[in-house]
Image (cartoon, rainbow, N blue to C red; front, side):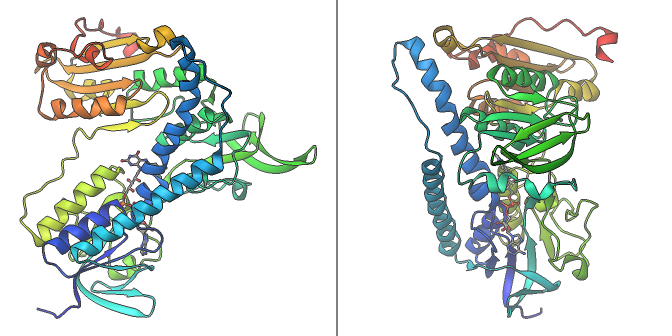
Amino acid sequence: MADYDLDLFVIGAGSAGTRAARIAAGHGARVAVAEERYLGGTCVNVGCVPKKLFVYASHFSEDFEDAAGFGWRVGESSFDWPRLVANKNREIARLNGVYRRLLEGAGAKVIEARARLEDAHTVAVGDERYTTERVLVATGAWPVVPEIPGKEHVITSNEAFFLEALPERIVVVGGGYIAVEFAGIFHGLGVEVTQLYRGPCFLRGFDDDAREFLAEEMIKKGVDLRFNSVVAAIGKEERQGREVLVVDLDDLETIEADLVMYATGRRPNTADLGLEAAGVALDESGAVVVDEAWRSSVPNIHAIGDVTDRINLTPVAIAEGHALADSLFGPAGRTVSYEDVPSTVFSQPNLGTVGLTEAAARARHGAVDVYKSAFPPLKHTLSGRDERTLMKLVVDRASQRVVGVHMVGPEAGEIIQGLAVALKAGATKAQFDATIGIHPTAAEEFVTMREAEPEPSQEAAE
Ligand SMILES: Cc1cc2nc3c(=O)[nH]c(=O)nc-3n(C[C@H](O)[C@H](O)[C@H](O)COP(=O)(O)OP(=O)(O)OC[C@H]3O[C@@H](n4cnc5c(N)ncnc54)[C@H](O)[C@@H]3O)c2cc1C
C-alpha cells in the first residue's frame, strides 16, 4: 500500500465537507480539510442561517400591525438595518468558531486556504503538498448572473447579506426559492419590491396549486410580481442628482430601482480545481458526476453536496457526508434516500412540501385523490390581515398512500417536517384520518380533510 500523508483530504468545509471530515476523523482516519473562504460554507455564512434570520426580521412589520387587533397599541416603530447585519455577523462568527471546534475536536486538521488537485493523490495548498489516499470534493456552488448588458451593476444573494444600507426600491430577478425568499425579506423590511421571472409562474417543480396560491398571497402583500418578464439590459443613470438603475425589459417597459439582485441559478465550484487533469468527469453544468457511492470517475476521488448538483439542500449534503465517511472508515450501512426529501421556501407565508406534486403523482400513479383546503388562519380573524393558508394532500388511489403533502401558510416548514415522517413511513389517508387533530391549530386540517376534489375534466387536465 502506498504511504500517504493522509487518509482523506476534504476540499471545502461547508455542510457536506465538515460532516464528512469530522465523522471520518472520529473513525480514526487521518483527515485534513481545506476551506478558502468561511468555515461552515454557504449555509452558515450566506445561505440558510442568515437568510432565516432576515426572514424573522422582516416579519416583524406584519406582527406589529397584527398586534392592534389583539388590543395592543404599538408605538411608532423603526428599523435599523446596520444593527441587524451586525448582529447577524456576530452570530455567524460564533458559528464559524463552532465549526472549527467540531473539526479540530474530532482530530481533523483545518487548513484555511484554497486547495487544488495536482493529481489523484496529491493536493496543493499554497506551497504545501499533501499526499492522500482519498480526496473528497465538497466545494459547493456559486451564483451565476447571465450575460446581459449591465450585469456589472447587479448583486447576488452573496452581497445581499452585507449591504451597507437598504435600498428604497429593489428589482429581484429569478423564480427559484432564493429569489422568492429575498423578495419577501426586502418587502417586509419596507423596500419597494419588484420580482421578475421569465416563466409563467415561479417555483418550478413545486406543486402548481401551491405556487399559484403563494403568488397571489405575495401580490396581496404588495410585492410587484411579474411573470413572463425578461430583462434585456440594465443601465445606470443619474436622476435628480442620484444614481439609479434602469432595468429594460424585452417588452420595452423599464423599471427604475436602487438595487437589482439576480438569483437565477448557481454553478458547481469545479473550475480550476485540477479535476479535469486528474481525470474526473464533469457534466455539462460543471457538476462532478458520481455513482451511488459518491465516487467520481476516478475511484479514490469522491464528491458530495452542491458540487454534484442534485438535491441542493443542506440536510442532504450533511447526510451524504456522514454516510460517505461511515462507508469509507467506519461501520458502513448508513444510506441516503433521495425520495421524499421535504423542503420549505421561507417565503411569506412559507411554502412547505414533501413527496410528489399533484402532476408528478398523476404521472407516476395514474389515478390520485386530491384533498385541498384553503382558509384564513384563526389569528387573522382578529388581526384582520387578508392572508390565507392552503393545505393539500395527494393520495395514490390504488394503495391509498399519501404521496404528497403541500402547504402554504405560517410555519409550513415546521408542520411539513413532522408530516414527512408519516409520508416516509408510508402512511395511508385512513391513517391520517385516524389521527386526532391538535385543536386549534392550522396543522389539524391535514387530518380532517374528508372530501376529495372532483376529478379535473379532461380539458382542464390538458
Ligand atoms: C441564499 C441561500 C439560501 C439557502 N437556504 C437554504 C435553506 O433554507 N435550506 C437548505 O437546506 N439549503 C439552503 N441553501 C442551500 C445550502 O446552502 C447548500 O445546499 C449547502 O450549503 C451545500 O453544502 P456544500 O457543503 O455542498 O457546499 P457549501 O456549503 O457551499 O460549501 C462549500 C465550501 O467549499 C469551499 N471551497 C470551494 N472551493 C474551494 C477550494 N478550492 N479550496 C478550499 N475551499 C473551497 C467554499 O468556500 C465553501 O465554504 C441555501 C443556499 C443559498 C445560496
